[in-house]
Amino acid sequence: MKKITAIRSEFQNIPLKTPFITALRRVESVEFVRLFVECDDGAVGIGEAPSTLAITGEDIYSIKESVEKIKDLLIGLSLSEALKMLHKQTIGSSAKAALDMAIVMLQGKNIIRDKESIKTDITISLNAQERMLFDAKAAVRDGMDILKVKFGSDINHALCVTEALALEVPEAKLLIDANQAWSVDDALFYVKSVANLPIELIEQPVKANDLDGLKSITEVSTIPILADEAAFTLEDVKQIIEFKSADMINIKLMKCGGVSRAVEILEYAREQGISCMLGSMLEGPYSINAALYLAFNYRDVIKYVDLDSPLLYKKRSEKLQFDYRANEIFYADSSSQSSTSPFTMVSS
Ligand SMILES: [Mg+2]
Image (tube, helix red, strand yellow):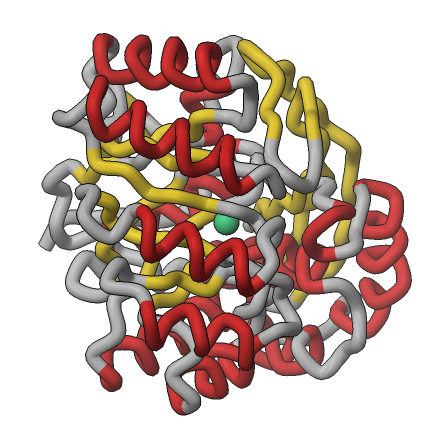
């Protein structure tokens, strides 16, 4: 049985084409930690976690620190023992996710059976109305028809931009994301005002900890409400679904603690008949690979894929195991991949 012999980590940085702006932050490059979990048979698993201080409370320094803090507990263990030990630790969810995905990769159980392409949305950053319309039209012209539209606390701006988008890019599917910026009253005003517009869903309108507020919006809205920042772990998800605080859940590796935890949430969602979004932060190529592996394997549960980070990179990353053509994602054949491919993917 394989045993872990070493864990090392490094800082990485990928420049973006244009700044990424939401209600919570503005960034010009993806900053992340890449880590390597080495085994006694020479196998190496690779994991990544990005800086998202505004969401998970972790930056690249605290992620690296968390990895350093617990790595001696994992060294010497088998892969399944290491996963158990990892998830008992009280470290940030992103650091956990990076270690989890590296260990799951070493387990080599991940198989893609259905290689048919999937589609991701593309983010339209929060900006002045004219700029958002310009960006949306440019995206549609480039063949991208699922737009994740980011809004801030100005509800009139959100309403005006939504109406203009519905009118001017009618072919696009609109996913609205407020990133917790609205009050319950503003959110209620918004959902009533846009009830007749073709909007796919509204994501995390209010503060993450306001589940009652979220529920009151879900009750009124004819458009599905999706919980993102409110839903980190399986326990959060169960609470939200049981109390009907939201209709859907946005699952992200960095929130739930990695691939093995995301699988638990996906299995629960499948059991409950809940549709999910599989999202990510702005992330590096290995963690996007790990998320895409899930998106390809849980198509029945994952209704929306929000994995557009690689579309925002200035240059394509060679570490990416998938090809993006506009917003359509194809699994690139593993025969050309190096031995450090993140997942063993074979067609059955
Ligand atoms: Mg979101």
